[in-house]
Structures are given as C-alpha cells and as structure tokens.
Amino acid sequence: MSKLWSGRFSKGSAKLLDEFNASLPFDKKLYKEDIKGSIAHATMLASVGILSSVESESIVSGLKEIEHMIDDGEFVFDISDEDIHMAIEKQLIKKIGESGKKLHTARSRNDQVALDFRLFVQKSNLEIIDLLQELIESLIYISKDNTSTLMPGMTHLQHAQPINFAFHMLAYANMFKRDIDRFESSYKRSSVLPLGCAALAGTPHKIDRVKTAQLLGFDSVSVNCLDTVSDRDFALEILFNTSTVMVHISRLAEELILWSSYEFKFITLSDEYSTGSSIMPQKKNPDVPELLRGKTGRVNGNLISLLTVLKGLPLAYNKDMQEDKEGVFDSVQNVSISLQILKEALLTMHIDKENMLKACSTGHLSATDLADYLVAKCNIPFREAHFITGHAVSHAEKLGKDISSLSYEELKDVDERIGEDAIKFLSLRNSMNARDSQGGTSEESTKKQIKDFEEWLAKRD
Ligand code: ARG
View (cartoon, rainbow, N blue to C red):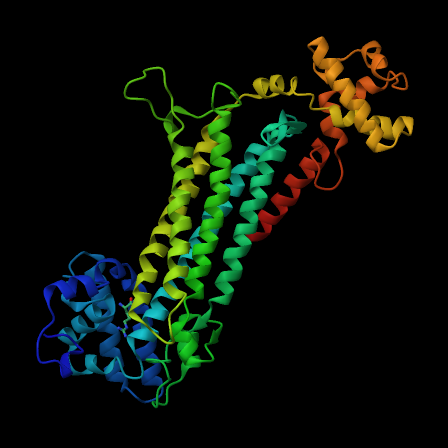
C-alpha cells in the first residue's frame, strides 16, 4: 500500500526523505495513546451516526488486535509510514478493509498527535507524582530517626548555626512536595480534549466532542481549534516540572557527594550504590549522586530545546513541532529513574551521627546565640551585641577554642556584662533547640514538621 496521503503525488518519496521526515522510530512509544484516542473517536462517530455501529465495532476490534500485535512485538514498523498514526491506520485498513478508511473522518493528524502526546504527558505526570511521593516517604523515614542528630547548618558552605539532620532532610521533602503540587496543577490544566479540532479550523461533520472528552476522561473540551493544534504548553510544563525536580535532586546529590568525602564524612554511601576506580584500589566513588547531578544538564536542555522550537512558529501546526517528543520522553525517563535511585541511595546510606556532631564543634556555630543572649538578658541593642560577639569569636580563636567551649571567665574577659547563664546559651544543642519559631530547627519544631508531613501523606493514600 502506498502512503495514505499520496493522492496528489506522482512520484514516491526519496528514501533519505523518509528517514529525515519520519517520527515513527520514536513516536511508536505513543501507540497505546493513539489506539485509545482512535477507539474513543470511532465510538463518538458511531454515537452521532457518522459511522454505523457495525463499522465502529469492526474499527474498535481491529484497533485492539493491533494493540496486541504491538504489545507482543509482532507489528512490523515501516519507516515509510512516517509516524505511529499512519502506521496504525494503514494496518487497520489492511485488517478490516473499507470501514478502516472511515476512521479519519472529522480528524487530522494535527489534533490526533496533540491528543496522543497530551495523554502520554498526563500519564507521565501521574507516574512522576507517585515516585516523588515515595521519595518523600523515605526522607520522612530518615528524618524520624534524626531529629536529635546535630549537624552544622551552613551558608556559603561555611559553618553557620547548628541544626539537626532531620531538619535538613525535611527541607528537601518540602521541595519535592512543591514539585508534586506543580505536576498536579499541570495535570489539571492539561485535562482539555484537543480531538475534533481537525487540521486547524474544526470540522463540518456534526461530531460530539463532549462525548469524546467523557470517553477519554478529560475535564473539558478545548475552546479554540487554532490554539488547540498549536498548543504545546502541556509539554513545556512537564519539561519545566521535570527540570525543577532535577535541580532539587541535583542539590541533594551535591550534598551527598560532599558529605561522603573524607573532608566531611557525614555519610557513607552503601556499597550497592557506589563504584570503584579502575586504577586506585582504595577508592569508593559517589557515581550515583554525580550522575544525578550530571543528568540535570540534559533535562534542563530539553526544556530550552522545546522553548526554542516553539518560539517563532506561526499558527497552526508546523512540522517543527514533531521535535517536541524526544526531549519529553528523555526527561520523563531520566527523572523517573533518578527519583528511584536517589530513594535507594538515601535509604541505604550510613549516617555518621558522631562525625556530624564533631563537625559542630568548630566554626563557632552558636555565636549568634551569644548575640541573642546579650540582647535578651543584658538589654544590649543587636548591632552592639553582634560586635561584642565578634570579639568573643576572635578571643576564642586566639585561645584555639570554639565559642561553644569558652568558660565563664573567658567570656567575662570579652564583656563583663556576660553572666554565667551564657554558657547554657552557647551549648550547641541549646542553640538548635532555641530556634523553635514556626518552621525552625528545634527538635520540637522538627517533630511537628514530620507529623504534618505524615498527615499530608496519609490523606493522599
Ligand atoms: N508525526 C507528526 C508529529 O509528530 C504528526 C503530525 C503530522 N501532521 C502533519 N500535518 N504533517 O508532529
């Protein structure tokens, strides 16, 4: 059978053109969405009398057989069919004859591809949401065991204030929770039926788009056909959302890499999720977090790539838009595996609580507490308290000590208004627990954050 659109052509297409033009090698991934959409379309066409019920039944059963053929690897893909839509339609006509030729009534590949791709993106949104939720669950699991694990909180990668490890993990849980929110709102926004817009202007056939929307589970029907066949916002959204997830993953990956170095030694990645060096026998490399960090590049690239493809396109469909799929497939696949492997790496790593505690004894983590003490107990304005504390820090440095281990006498040398009770304020655990404002790092506040997460998770199940 020649090409389905070959009526006005007198010569067949060049082989090179077939290879260049075809999307079949990658869009065959959409076969289930294509068949689902065609079944809904045929059912709707029968409901309005455009197809007889016999015709629609034979189309539906033919499509189901084709689906099984593809499932079982029995379908022979021929690149000269151009794309998955043509490949399936051609096979259908081959299988059921004349009624197969009626399936494309009131439809074009422009609304067909908009539908198939949208269904794929919607399915991917839901799959990624599940994986994000599993990752959050594992962060909560780790947090529950670490609300009293002191670690240095940092700014500028310099010791800043003592926090607990659970608080740090919960920061990431919050990022991934916002990611879920983004995928959910994108899902809702994309729940609009494109099918029935045909090439760009609608169709003279008396179709029932509401019926098709119901059959496919869409919330509504698109309102302007020209916009509908040109619109790839749903693809941009999943590319942005996956990029944001990868940026979050990458920041955590970076910390895992730092924390597993000899300089930090806060964690040890399990052997199952580390690799060795081919030359240096002593090495255990953090390849997993490094690859997670590295993959962020391609996922971010996919977003920029589609933005660039779309930016100058006149309405409506242009073949440039065929370039929308591979980046989305790639981002979805890479984010999915990244979420799974990050979860496993976290659950299997060893957390070295003692080393984290040891690290807290340098860098004057509780310096701010001395300033806060001077404000609260000695009625000294904060700016001045800050200055005095600066002195205390340099005094401690001269003595080769951390501010948290200065004695009462040593503190008195800095400013005689400092009382004995300042010692308690300077203790690291006290410093952490003092930060009990809403969202703060105190054990109490951290436990509350865990409880809120658990309630949120329970509601989702
Ligand atoms: N393979 C095409 C794509 O992925 C399908 C739509 C083709 N439409 C057209 N008018 N040539 O974008």
